[in-house]
Amino acid sequence: MGRMTFVFRRLLLLVPTVLGVTIITFFMIHLIPGDPARTILGIHATPRAIAILHREWGLNRPLASQYWLFMDRLVHGNLGTSLYYGVPVAGLVTSHLPATLWLICYAAVIAIVISVPLAMIAASRKDAVRDHIVRAVPLLGLGMPAFWLALILQTTLALKFRLFPVSGYGTGFVGHLHSMFLPALTVAIALCPVVIRSLRASMLNVLGADFVTTARAKGVPGPRLFVRHVLRNAVIPAVTVLGINIGFLIGGTLIVEQVFQVPGIGQLMINSIFQRDFDVVQAVALVFGIMVVLVNLLTDVAYASLDPRVRFDR
Amino acid sequence: MSAISLSAGTGSGDSSPQVAAAERTQPRRHHWYRQPALMAGIVIIGLILLAVIAAPLLTHWNPDAQNLNATLSGFSGRHWLGTDQEGRDTFARLLYGGRVDLQVAFIAVLFPFVLGTILGSVAGYFGGWIDILIMRLVDIVVAFPFFVLIIALVFVLGPGERSIYIAITLVGWVSYARIIRGEILVAKRQEYVLAAQSGGLSNLRIMGRHLLPNVITQAIIYAMSDIVQDILAIVTLSYLGLGIQPPTPDWGTMISDGQNFLTTHWQLTTIPGLAVVVTGLGLSLIGDGLADLLRPGQ
Image 1 (cartoon, rainbow over the protein chains, first blue to last red):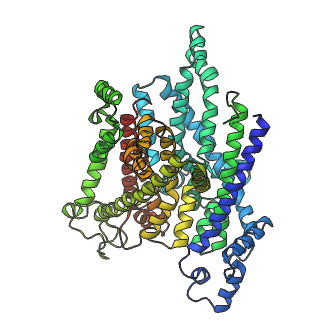
Image 2: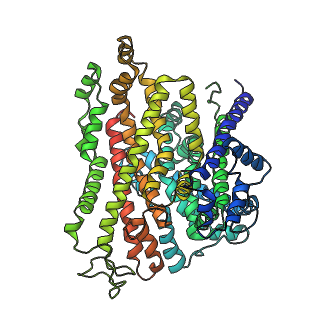
Image 3: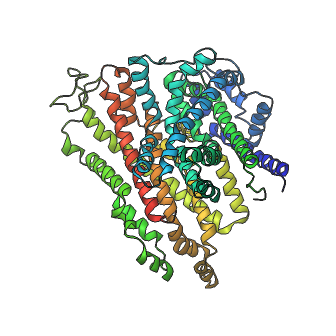
């Protein structure tokens, strides 16, 4: 199977997954106990307001017809109207999306910058003390609540030492870099244990490969061997690991955005939960789901194109 | 904890003569008590469990009892970790809060474990359309970031413990299903399964008595890291006000309550956070140690 056929087949597989994502987000409204419209609008809602919401969501129609209405609106770019802001949800989501994308990319870069040297230290001598330390310390990050770490970093580095702004998104490229450092670091620290672990494993694999033995036999010095031969071949799996963990990465941004008041879709979702703004929560969940599906596709395709050893006939 | 590791150890043990011989000749470091990570994890979690279970013996304070005359007091002989903004003893709340969080997390991990194991076994054993259907469903649920779906589900179901269990089950089963399906796909081609099939045993019996004991190990190892995820989900939900509801003490609510006093009374937020981190570390060490112990070849 050729590369194009692989990409085409992968794109075809995307269709049922994306449809499934829409079905799950659609069904969320039916998980609301009792009458969703009444629950969302609260006990003081007027019968008229409830009736309007019923009509808008099509709650009085059969289930299939409701889903059809949902999809019809979706393909026309209509994600509903925010109950709290009174504006179309699609506009709200697109205006909040850049901050989240910034945070995700920034966190991924920081995670790579932290993980690559640590994984190199660990892999340089398997089972040595430094290997055990590099493997054990990140375990602390696995069980660390992101919001708690965010609060601690905010209090120490921002409030006490005044190195970074306490909150916000900043303006301009440098402003974003400065303001978003702490949020991105928080997300990156949660991600590092996973990346370090797989990077170390793939480096150990590469270190055992014949071409490394040949390079060693030729007398290539240690550092040069690591950078030219090992790192280059171990980075592809690391990028793949980031791609696979994109869901984890995105999930981490949600609460961190809330603590640092970053105006992204994560914060929009949390705020909308407090305001019981159902359409917005539903739309953000949908956007996050589709984002993960797309990144997974890109990772697969990028991996297949970058690594000549990947065969396309799975 | 040691009970879990021991039972998992027998689960991996196959009764075939080759495996028995391999077990006899395996290096001594593969004994469970010779795994430093596993031992450290068992000690940490053992101490934490002991502390939260023996909470009434360790503190005489009621975690919910307010004393508005003694709010925000620092460390003292009377209140070891001080009191919060409502004059409640922080140490008592820490212990009783841990009790709630750990109990909910340990129960919450069971439902997805069972559901995922059943669906994964069915998908892997029968294959065909039922496999395609279950794995498509897995792909769809996996598409959502864990926290996004959990928070959205608890939001629509309404805050509280019941919603936490439902949300974690609906989202968490997929990993177990994937693991078990993969293992069953390999195991079902082994001679002992073929022998059982030709012996005319029912599919249910083959899956339950012959396949599951041989493949469940991987799911148990995963469950250890999954509990860490669940604890994080529970404290995060409680921090947002969607999880354990006040006045029941829990670590997430404690962090949330203390954050307004972070610059003046750092301990109110820092200590419950550290409790989560140490618990997560202990469980991760157990997971790592179990993986080393039960998958020595990798």
